[in-house]
Structure formats: structure tokens, C-alpha cells
Image (cartoon, rainbow, N blue to C red; front, side, top):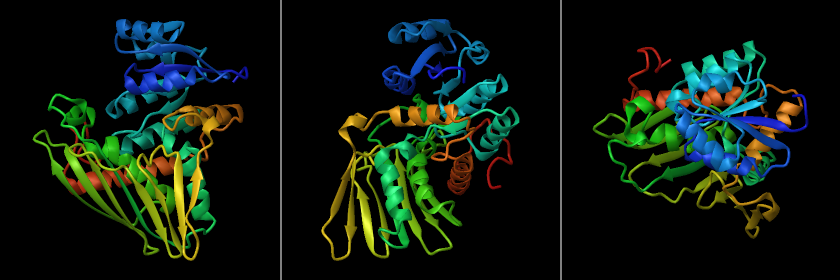
Length: 338
């Protein structure tokens, strides 16, 4: 970091990259200086849309751009290891979309690269940076509902998605679990840490990816989590955590909430709402601000989204895929069931 303004590069030009960039350019201390895609045409179109000065038709050119302080990797997760690894090797700091990688082996390789090159690396788990989710975490940690007993969360899309869609393409890491299930799993991890027991059942597509998956996680404390993700039915996307002395509910859109409701025995329900000044619930600004705060502080990872936590989530996702029988064609035989 040489200035107060953090200079961003955007790697990929899909929908999530557009949404993140739109929020980023509204931040006075952020500047988007370059974008890269697999094709120069796509990169130039994206650059013109957002007023970005440089557009690259290859990822390596963006990674080599020394005017960039941090790269946001927004490819499908099957390409995260390659794209983020390229940037880390070139000395760039990286914010990498979720799921972090295809499997924990790839995630471990990225973390090792970041530490070897002394670079910042963070999974783009925007849910963890959301003020309402942070408030929920504080309430649970402070004992507001007693000892956590159960966690419930779901994320389903109505679909249907045709076989040609990336969500059904094994080569792109398709399936409900990595694309949607990462949110319920990460929510449970946030509150309880890595589970000691993992059970899973799924309905698979003809291509061999999961159309919907149900997970039952357990902890040595006696806590349980019931989680669900689906590409074949739109769920309420709600979440709740129940403790020995109360419960916290998050209504629809638990992964980017604007309110929560605290229920405690013998008391009226209490609602905690987001500050309207923070922007719409769909904003990525909280995540971007956390990255920039960490970079200015000279940190190589965020305490809100620690790398060990991202690795633990990947271990849980790997174990779940082993149990439902989903393996991607680019994976080695030893990638799951470690």
C-alpha cells in the first residue's frame, strides 16, 4: 500500500463481478484500475461499462500489473485455484469468491502461496462481514441465548436449470452444495466451528452433480445443525440458532440480512435492524471495506474471514461430497475423504 486509496483489479466479467464492481466504485477510498477476462472483447466491454482504464484479455497480464493493490477473483469456483494462484505468485493480494476452491487441497495450496509470498488472501464470504450477522455472532458469543443447541439454515433456487448451465456442469464444479450450500455450512461454522460429525443425502442430476443436498452436522458439545441447499426448489433462505435460553431468527435472505429477531425466555422479542446508512442489504461494501482496512493495517488475513475458517468449511464440503458421491473430473483420486 502506497496511498490511502486502494487500487483494485477485477478478474472475470460475469454477474457477480459486475455487482461487486458497481458497489466498489461508489466507495471514495477505492479505485478500480483494471479488469481481465479470457477474451479482450469481454474485458473491454466491462471496462467501458464501469469506466475502468485498463482491460486485459488474459489473466496473467492483470496479475502482472504492479499498479494493483488487490485483485477480486470472480470466476466460477472451478477456476479459483488457477486464477487466485496466478495473482498470488505475481505478488498481488487477493479477495477470492466462494466457494473458496473446488476442494480443501486447492484451498491449502492457495493459503500456502499467500503465506509464502506474504500476501493478503481472503475468501469473499460477504455474509461474515454483514453488520447484522456480526451482531448475531456477538449475541451468541455473549451468551444471549445460552449454549447453542441447534442451527438451521437453507438456500434453494427454484430453477429449473438446463443441463448446459454451469450449475449442472461437473467441469465447472456444478451442483447445489458448492454454489449455495457453502452459505448454510459457513453459517453453522461461524457459530460452532468445525463439526465432528457429518452426514449427507442428495439427489443427483444425470451429469453427476447434486440438485439438492441435506446435511446433518454434529459437534462434541452436543449441538446439531440441519442444513439444506437446492437447485430445484426455491426455499425461504432462512436461518435460526437455538440455545438453552433462547433463539435468534433471521428471516429470508439470511446470508445478507437486514434484521434479526432475538427471542429469550420471559421477554418480549427484540429486533435488531441494519443501519439504513449502510446501504441496501445486497451491498458488497462491507466486504470491500474489510479488505481495505486489513490492507492498510498490513494484515495478511481478515479476522472476520480467517483462512483457517475457510479451510475448515472446505473440509466439511469435501466430506459432504464424499458421502453423496459427487466428484469433479479434474480432481485426483485422493482429493476427497482426507
